[in-house]
Amino acid sequence: MALTSPRRAGRRTNVGLLALLVVAGGSGVLAFAVGAPGPARLVVAAHGAAGLGLLLLVPWKAVVVRRAWRRPPDTRGSGGVSLGVATLLTLLTGVLHAVGVTGPWSWTAGVPVLHVHVALGVATGALLVVHAWGRRQRPRATDLDRRGLLRAGALGAGAAALWGAGEGLLRLTGAPGAERRATGSFERGTDDPAAMPVTQWISDVVPDAASATLSLVAAGRRVQVPVTDLDRGDVVRAVLDCTGGWYAVQDWRGVRLDRLLTEHLDGQLPADGSVDVVSVTGFRRRLPLSDAGGLLLATHAAGRPLAPGHGAPVRLVAPGRRGFWWVKWVARVEVVDAPWWLQSPFPLQ
Ligand code: HEM
Ligand SMILES: Nc1nc2c(c(=O)[nH]1)N[C@H]1C(S)=C(S)[C@@H](COP(=O)(O)O)O[C@H]1N2
Ligand SMILES: [Mo]
Image 1: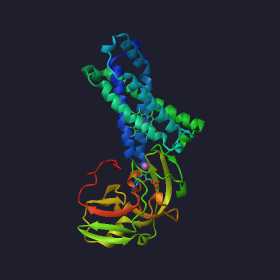
Image 2: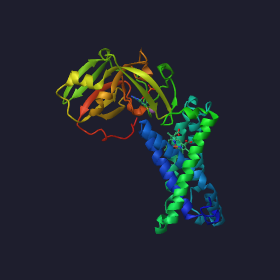
Image 3: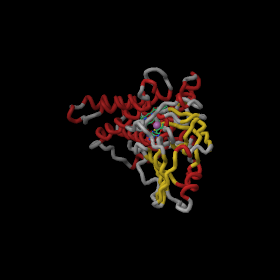
């Protein structure tokens, strides 16, 4: 479909690219936060479509770029080349992850290709700010007229079609990516915890010695529970889905958090409120207390005690939440009044 001829490319092309990059960046971050399969599928589809949709505007952008290069250098603005390169590398690594190639590009090389993708995505965002600053493309009334909306709609439909074609191709060719979860993650070590990667969020490290007791705290009261008392036979089958791009399903065993809290702190539990789950390393997450019935403090996976790297002697199991909520080496569980959303959306260590 000829929306406009590439010769008339210009402001609208730039606005289109900007919109797609903003959607790609936003949905990328959102993809890290969402754990439920339904919403994750939507977010990941929007992300893939916005990212791949950038390719549709390449012919138009090429004209814009060629035109700029015929002008004197001091009228050109800066950072365009690095932004272009960063954007294409971000796209490339995103696709490499989605296809699921093995070998040096996969997570087995030490660094998951998805982490490279995210780092490049963040760099692209920074370069975009530098590049677009001072050259703001002001919105015009005609952007939202019938033709403007048709163009935007056509770009959206084209992007969605490109993403759909990509997904179809993965299935047709039987690429590993056809099997990935709604979040985009690949299966590693289901029912075999030893085959599960040991993953730290940013800078945390496996502690030398974990705590032999668990502190339960509420309303100024503190109870010390030996970790050997935590295997009560409560079992939850749940998916650990890491933002590094892998997931595993295990039978986790231990004690339900609501059960443990009512046993030891009954009477001190507020009707609403939150619960801080804190690792011996300082890594922590705050969850709504109303979720406690679905949370497990696990001492075992697949019938075996947790390995040190996987959080021994006790870790949190948070079904439906991404891996960074599954605090390992839990030393303290504290009931607090503050709302759960009053914390950094992602851990800081
Ligand atoms: C502006 C920058 C970005 C662009 C252009 C981009 C583009 C892409 C593309 C094209 C894919 C492959 C989708 C597919 O083929 O189905 C992808 C996958 C992915 N990206 Fe990004 N991305 C960007 C930033 C980010 C950021 C900042 C994050 C996370 C914080 C992120 C997370 C992901 C994830 C989780 C996948 C895997 C989804 C799947 O398997 O389909 N991306 N990205
Ligand atoms: N204390 C602590 N707990 C943590 C992390 C961490 O860095 N420190 N990483 C989280 C992340 S990002 C994931 S995906 C899972 C990984 O669990 P595993 O190492 O048992 O596979 O643990 C979570 N719990
Ligand atoms: Mo993770």
